[in-house]
Image 1: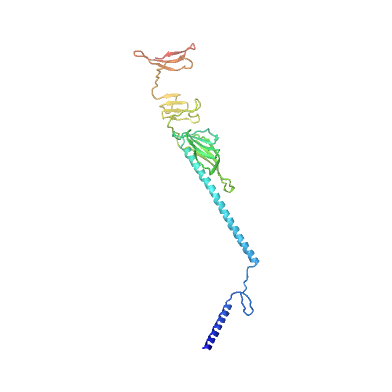
Image 2: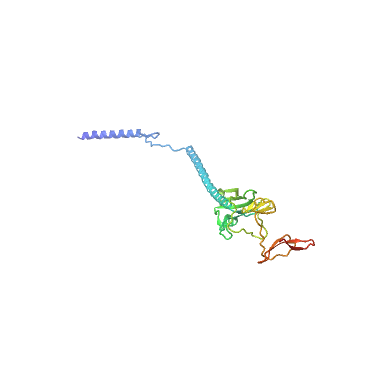
Length: 311
């Protein structure tokens, strides 16, 4: 029994030795263990050249990454500026166009550049309409009627540094207004700076319409019409042909031509016949049982002026 145990122990020892040997043989690469010579396992590290190559590649990748990131950020910042300026400039132009096209009159001297656009409108609630630049805050405002409250057409996110209006007259066509302005993004960051210059022309579309009396702002200053642009008729009743005027006659051949009767309803007191009333016809309306008189103021052979009875 004791010998059996010894044999078993010997067999177990041999198995352990065989397992150790197999484990030693499974050691990989350049790691070696020689039990007899007591040599420890050895692992090789990175050389200096390998470390430098790695650092160089890593640095190059980081530089490329940062460059792309900065470029993308710059483009995004630029897009924000340009989008804001483009949107506000388009809104400003469309607003000006809408009011010019619907106006009855561009109330400005022609060929004179100004920073305020004055439009006469058909509605009392909109007449007159002003569009102007406030240079203190570089914002464009809209004001309707002289006592109206100004409304901002641009915001503080942009600055309008220049706004000019010039009226252009087109004989035979409706007047136009030339518009130019400079708008920029309101920032001190040079990377966000974006400036846009615009120039356009807008013509009136609507005919002149009024819902109240036409009154001159000053006495004996303004005229209706001009010699180069004659009116054809007034209410299709009074007609013009050169210097001839026709009442009920579309093509008058005389200085005054009337289609119908001419009534002299002179109930007021007859003026004194003089050089200023020379050629005046007058009807004296008499009372019951007395005939009327038709008189004309003329100068006789003695160079005096008198009323002469025609009837």
